[in-house]
Amino acid sequence: MTINQASELSIGVSSETGTLQRLLIHSPDRGLGKVVPSKAQDWLFEDIVHLDTMRRKEYDYYVKLLLYFLDPDKIKGKIADINDDPTRSFFIPGTEKYFASDRVVDIQRLLGEILEDPGTRTKLTAAICGIERCSYQIQEELGTFDAHELARIFISGSCSDQRMLFAPLPNLIFTRDIGIVINDHILLNKPAKAARTRESILAQFVFFYHPMFTHIRGNLIEIPENERHFLLPDDEKASDYQRCTLEGGDVMMVAPGHLLIGCSERTSIYAAQQVMKILFDKNVVQKITIIKIPKKRDYMHIDTIFTQVKKDVWVLLGSLARLGDEARKKDVLHFFAPADANKEFKILQFEKGKEQQPIEIENLEDLLTAISRKDLGVKGPVRFIYSGGNEFPYGEREQWTDSCNLLALRDGVVIGYDRNDKTLEAFKKEGFKIISARKLLEKFEYEDLSPENLTDTFITLPSAELSRARGGSHCMSMPLLREALIRES
Image (cartoon, rainbow, N blue to C red; front, side, top):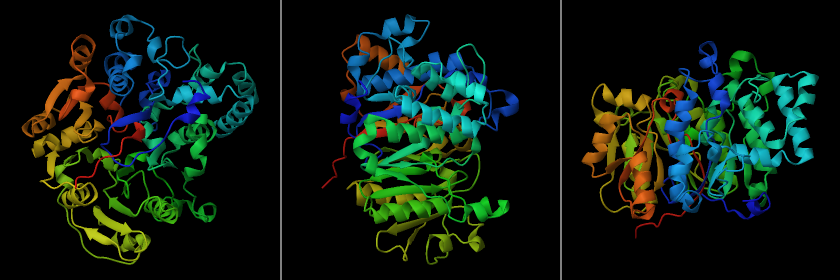
């Protein structure tokens, strides 16, 4: 794909399980190898990771799987050569052997392409140097690098000679958090943590300046900051009712007219209300369900406690599944008023034109069942697969390592981590086939098996290092295009 051809690519996501056709990813970069213990938590990591293992033995399998499902011509017949290449050039944007797919797209590649334009380069360099408080000397030095190396520096914080110019962005591998496609619109997110500010700026420049998104520039949605933000005392700025933060792991497009927004430690109620107002005003969706979850590191986003596997199958954390609640009030901010702050888990559903009469839903199973039946037309039973088989202590243990954070490649075919044994057993009991990424790639490459032939399959990804980064395959993807699901009649 050339930068000019990119403008012809379509954008559209109206479900969580329609066949995936295009997505945005980011392979682990050299910045991940710069995370040190004293800064790990500041940079939102629980531990330091071994970069080479994360790349070669884990994430590279993820990319190869995505290519086989979305763009097989880029990888078919090349597995042996890819595996034998010590440079990994197949996976590195800007290199001669890079796979350069227009369906599996690395944001680093798009960043490098927009930096080839002198005007964009000047603007972005000034913006980055401003927030990073760089010296004029560093700003001048940045002008000496070619576009793709500059993209690597902006993301990793370091040069090829290992010098660090600013902090790395180790969380950019979780591309879900920078934006979310809602039908034919893209919602640009507002990260909750200062460590991700540069990510947000890089994403804004890619979405506003890259030709891939030119035709939908009018459909890019930015969330307005609280107009009183600059006048608020610091303690009030942190309030869930004043701050405006939202990350993609808290947003799910579950049906053409239905969006889920989680209010978590990363996404504020104020931001959820602003998004709801914008989307209803623009008539992008007709129904928005807000799910308030406990502000705990264990949960982080709603996609860490549930994701959809198939139109009639969901995986979720049992300990949060059947919690009810009480009390109804007038609107979003009042409904979640401080007097109700101790209510850690709450589900409210709002319909366009009826925002003053939200419906309270008792538990996750009721919500997810209604989505499957009312929004997707499922006639039969809706099935739930629980993290760790809902056995103590495995439910919580395996949720911590992303047992509920799965990416659906198509309805009933998902990618998840191999380490969550009890959850995998629960999938087997529900009739799913379990196969490792390595074995499946071998079958694609050397046997007569095609991705189109897979049904009810859980593909396991090696995960010793990836799981330390606290995100699963759902987090590591920003779907740009999915086939529309056919509603059962």
